[in-house]
Image (cartoon, rainbow, N blue to C red; front, side, top):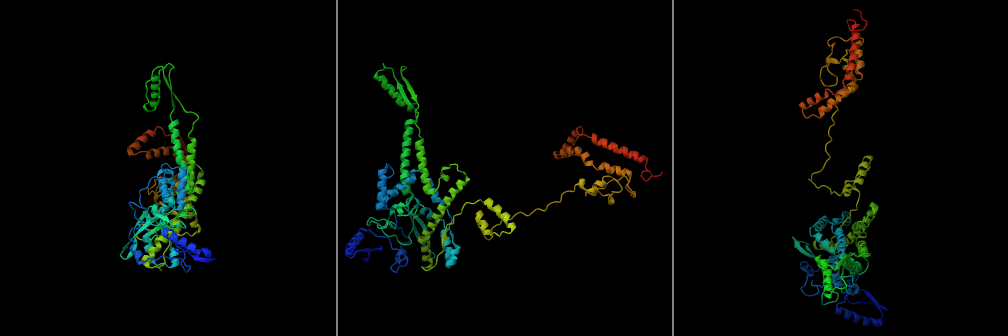
Length: 596
């Protein structure tokens, strides 16, 4: 046994010496028929094979390669596969696809999206989740590899261009069919190569190598597994939903049987409703009815469902019998079950599509599954773009040896912004150090650019000092007694209003000991708030509710007869009697017991 190198781009195989010639003959025959193997991963030196652009390759960068044809392998004229599809036909289509005839299967995959709204909805959700991710440059990776700033800026401009979104949308077509190819139309502007357009190409324009069924090639009538794709011209994305050959790793392959059974279910459901959706029309005729009369009765019964009117002899009758014991629930249950299985296969859950009650906890778990799937899709997308677009862009503009940055598609996990914001606000005063970048990531706000208007908290207003409450100040209470011993300097009210207080004894020097009348005034003034409260409150209320001074005067007149003045009047009468009694027995200086 010795190693025998197979001709063409294939691997080394071990065959007996006596079979080497026969093996060479088979390989030569296969090469004549166009049965090639995949391009080896390693070169003759055992190092990773790196494709390089030749001058001839650069000439075709601006030319369309996978051009649609009016007639030929890349023709768009295809017959419907889904019409009249049976389990036998579906099995034959899938089996033919395994052998390399992909065209019928790819046409069926396209029609599955057009004919089933649920399949289209969940598949579109999976596509849009990925296509709407914002690309960014991995700064740490670029710094570690020593990527030049000019290269970083050029790649950043590449992925932020408006047409880049079209590239992502074209690549997500691979979810249904297992692979997608987008042709790059390059243009040279001011000495720099950049994509002028990204052209989605129909998957039916391509095929796979005959040996491994894994390397995508351009379909051509002259060869079984087509032509090798030129370098730097196609972005070929294979999401690998499952391990295996790409043509069997798309959702159309996985959901084909469920989709077919659902079509049968809908067809039977419609037939059921056509039969049992309206009552049975039963015509009754007399035994003596002639054949002509019976014919007219049958005609009336048949047409009554359309015309909603009929004329029959009095001796005849038409009855409507409701269908009992028949239900369409099995059709609905089977259709719903198949939809759920498709949702699970594509989205990994059913919570966001079927809307069944399951609580917040279950919804969060289902959402986490979707985030996990999206992260996996993003990583595979990053790999494809780095291999088929970023690497060639850097090589064309900065040389083969220039290191390139990594483009990432970060997936933001759902989080409760209110809870985290509250926690940050409480922890920062306790000494927790939080970076502004981390907070911006939580709330989803970018850093402000130079010159942008910055939001700032409003300036705190200076609190106004509350107006003094005369009822709580001892000096005001004392001044209200109108006594000498509590008389303020200059006769000015101590509450701050600036008014002078009228004193009966103003201008008379205060005696050295308290006057009895002053003591009576102090006693009566201790609870003057309680005495005047029921009187003052209605007056203040009337003032607050009045729009004008005239309205206030009118309300004041109305309050005259409603105010209860008896307690205050009685209290004032008692105080006056005390003062009068003590006043008659006072001396010339106003003190009790003084000599005349």
